[in-house]
Image (cartoon, rainbow, N blue to C red; front, side, top):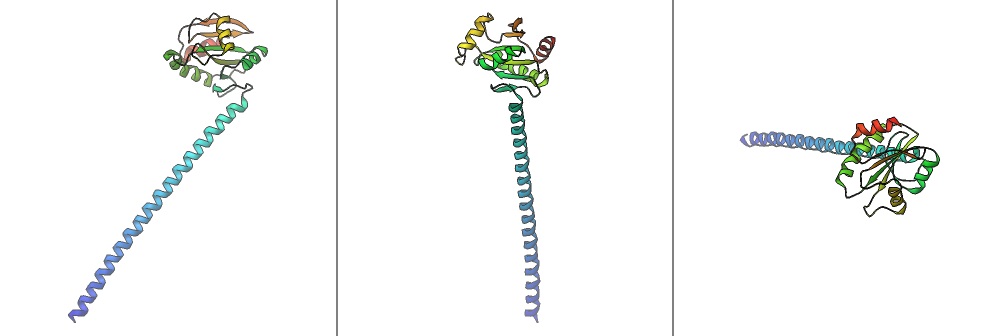
Length: 187
């Protein structure tokens, strides 16, 4: 009889122990599944974000009538890397033009570009286009050098605004976003 009681006790204990282990295993499986689902959701969210960014970039590229790289501008106003062909096209179309003479080694230029980008991302003027013109930084080409000479640019971060192909402003001082919006809104 003692043997039977011991056997029942061992079986009951084993069942309880096994049940506990199965519960723990079930909980671990559920945790692993939740973690996997969370990971999948994070990956899907990241993929959607990347797809959205790519679509936005493609839209910006599609909407630009110019061949150069769009640096800023989400509406009809674009700020581009300078190319002679795009500049000539803007002149021919009688666009208002901002020329920003930029040197890649210049800390003022780098700081100011954030404000330039912010302004162009806010502007929505189809009659305005901006160009970042390389200036004495090893990336400038002959047409950029000729442009700097034509407008008497003496040093980097100088801004020149043209209307109907004529210079209406030359500014060697630093501008913030508000100043860009003010000056470009005047023309």
